Image 1 (cartoon, helix red, strand yellow):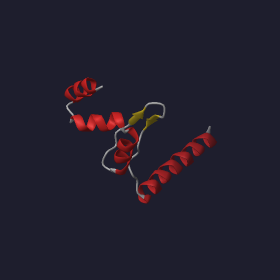
Image 2 (image 1 turned 120 degrees about the horizontal axis):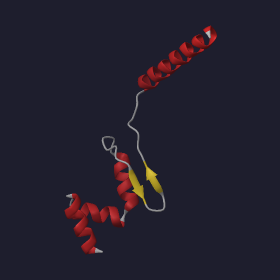
Image 3 (image 1 turned 90 degrees about the horizontal axis):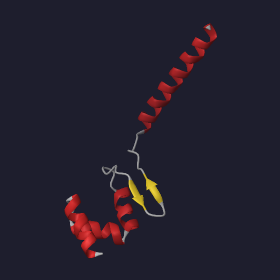
Length: 83
């Protein structure tokens, strides 16, 4: 196992301790990645699946997206009325 960890660390260019943490404690690694708001990587844990973390959005961003959606919907309904 140690040889595989060493080879992976050399291939990826990460510290051996980071690779050991991922291999031996995947949920602790996942917790650290989740807690870091700047880290937006997807994580895949065997038997659990793949987790993708979205960037944090503000309430204003959500409102703007909803307004865009409603505008598109109203334009589409007006086009259907004319056809």
